[in-house]
Length: 262
Image (cartoon, rainbow, N blue to C red; front, side, top):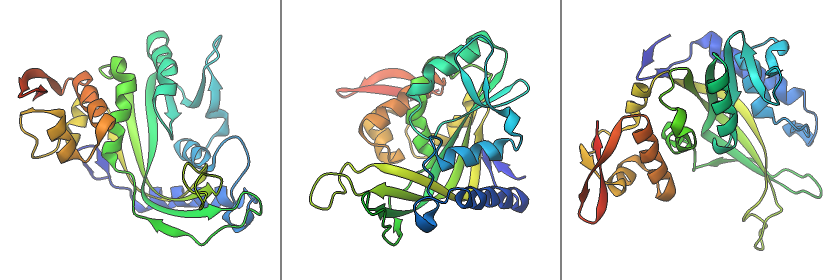
């Protein structure tokens, strides 16, 4: 498998396996018409990723002895945590694993780099025709999430893996405004196919997220403009880069705090 700056380009067999798991997961969930959206507590995306990581169901949902912590997937001395949302809720669990076991911990984070979406009437469960969504995820969106785990980012047993996916989202028409779309519930995300992966085994791997034109002495505003991360996400991303040892605080630039590429 070819690898460049942490990016792994899927071979056909690996991609075909993930795509097959997607189709099987949809067929196994007969609810909500042809969309196959399930009503189980575990969402479809989460279930597919676990199966992709390990086909043996005995390795899924493994409880750490004498604790309340349950690993999404555990294979021998390797723990995989599938996190489809924010990282902050898993902060305590990741810290416990790293401090109280000798396991390698990999956070697996799916990102929808191509998206389709349909609106669903919550009363009739009628599904509108799907449309392509222009707003989609990017690999660099991982960076702000890392700030929640900043105290552990230098630990050599903590790793990260991005799954770059095409997905089909379903939102309920239960929001505000006349069209019921503002603040609507994100009901389900169905994975359709895998387009690539990125792996991060050491802090140095995250250097790929430093914008090419970023000055060696910069402000968060400059980083925001060049990275496309906005507001709080830009600040969180720079804090994560500092925790990774890739940037450090430096002399102010005008009235703004300065940062220096290490």
